[in-house]
Amino acid sequence: MGLFTNSQTAVAETVYEKTKQYLKPKDGKVHLLMINSFSKFANQNFECEDKYTTQLNVILEGLQTDGYEIVDIKFNSLMGQGLTGTAEGFHTIILYK
Image: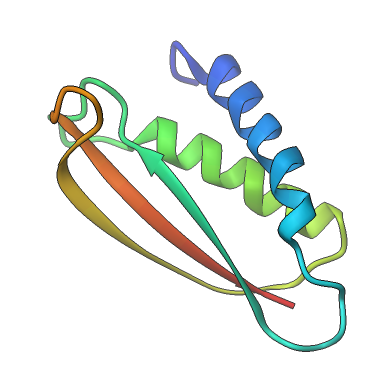
């Protein structure tokens, strides 16, 4: 696990709790959830992006634990994001039932 994994997990759990109000009822239809996030500060190495991986896994696990089915996941990334303009921003769309 990464150095900051516990705090990343805690932040993601808070985000998921706040996100629940936007989830649609389980009605068999496909719905979407968009999550915005940023890369970790030092993301110049060829390695697992542990912050994004940890935080998105918390969201996915929460959805599944609450009985939702993950249909698909799509994302894009944008360079030069954040307050300093040095972070990579991620927009992740989770399609769920």
